Image (cartoon, rainbow, N blue to C red; front, side, top):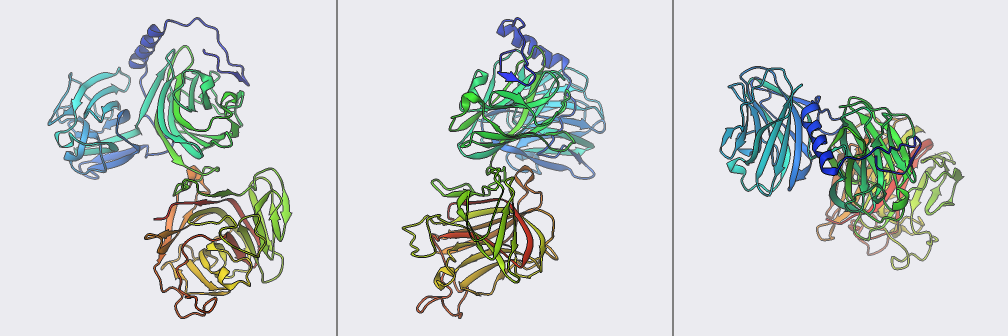
Length: 616
């Protein structure tokens, strides 16, 4: 075992290594001969199993986690449910319901054999019969630029066999540039497909690091994949790095199946885990790493197949040798034990914030970002004024703001009938002398926060409300109070509000149907308010999104409402000053982004972020 650095378990070994080529040969023989894969079950991602049938759903389509335009391996398990079927699985560009759309196809044919499409006809390198209700593991090795592919199949309890090597894509797909979809079909009989993985990589004992590049990440992001160890006491390490690496010190974020049968991750100089998490051979585990490159920390979560997500570690430090790395762009896999191998599939990168919440839009190059500092370990309470640990965060209105230091802010109105107001603006602004040339401003933004309603008087228009493209400090400057609001209302409604002059607003732009009868209490609701200039900077588009999963896997975000201010919104109302159009479209920058609520005795927030995004 190559020395990886210290561990709570001090895992070391000093056995004599076999020559490299011989090790690889033996290991690969073990893979091909002795390992009989069980159904390759996703712990997350695409559905574990789907069924196609000539008497039901003839076609089923499942997207790959990412489009594939180079050489890659795709694996899945298929079970014919009767003899004499005509059923199979293919890879395609986009969802398909006709055979002409499939580039690569393997099938169970009506003669009881397995064959593969080669250009315009089906064939096989050898005769491979199949039996009903037996699971077959298919491995596709695909070369998209060459428009060729090879297929291998392993019957349950058997050895891997070659179905076809370097076969041509279907004739109609001879020029396809990428593949992004699994397509299953059955026009005679029925078939079940499970455990879809693409791309897939396999590392064997004694082999070198397998490196795969991904788009360079220099801010916060989430990396996810499915990994399957072949043995119970393997030492399989999965890691992220800057550039392809050949040794452990070159990797920043490392997690592994260790030789004691546990899952752990690297925290600076040591391997450890927040809790004891065991693994078993031939079970697939879904890993989720929330990585913050600027702070050189990452959090690790794992989900066993059929189980619930568990915490391996939170805010672990990058490996000591990588404490100054500025970007990550490579994923590595190695098996550093004498026997066994590990398979890794469905690796995907998604843009997330520091808490692992999905960014619906990337931060624009050079754009401003702000993240609440409520998880800095410093409990504090304040009313009017700046947060002592975050001078850009200002408490205003008639509210009290208590931060627990672990990530949650609790607010309440200090005066009956009043409201809370929480602003983010330039720390140097003192309520007078505003000029966009003197102070930092916000332009087009994606505002994200998790909100919990606990106790209030039920003011209908209040609730989870954020304002943007606005200043609103001080209220006496009426033209500075103009701006746009996105509201999840206490009465269950969703709308956009446009303030013309404080406290006068235009008629709200409401969603036709309410997503709730009333805004629920004592649950975390994810809120995204996206506001940006569109149409060459002439109009303003507003969007509201929600997540009801408390941010699980970045959140499941659904758009609830959108509206574009193209003019006329506010016509006929009293303007903020003589000569100012009350229906003016408020494009461009302004000072503040803020959250408000009214007549509350307990409301809570967490994971508040503001990021500047591109116009459309």
